Length: 102
Image 1 (cartoon, rainbow, N blue to C red):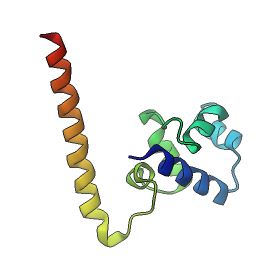
Image 2 (image 1 turned 60 degrees about the vertical axis):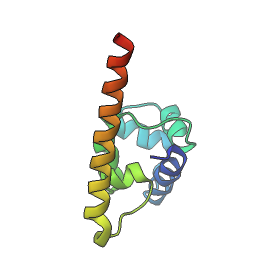
Image 3 (image 1 turned 30 degrees about the vertical axis):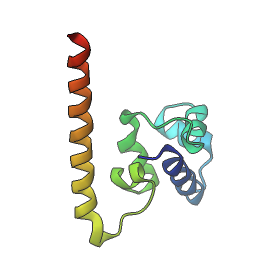
């Protein structure tokens, strides 16, 4: 996940929907400053916002995380890659947490 790429994608989708940062923030229940941070790549949407954000912007969560539309032909391959990468990241984080306990 590239926060800058995702941020540009969020901004592109938001402007296509003719939403202001404040308007999107109101729909999500967050601040317009949060939207600004996401769109500039200085932050990333909290996981609790991803489903609502994807619904409002009419993309799936994977597209939102990747920062671009997914071609239907590549969808299964990309979904599998995301699942594997997520499992790897969670496993690595879990392993590192146990290393620091020792």
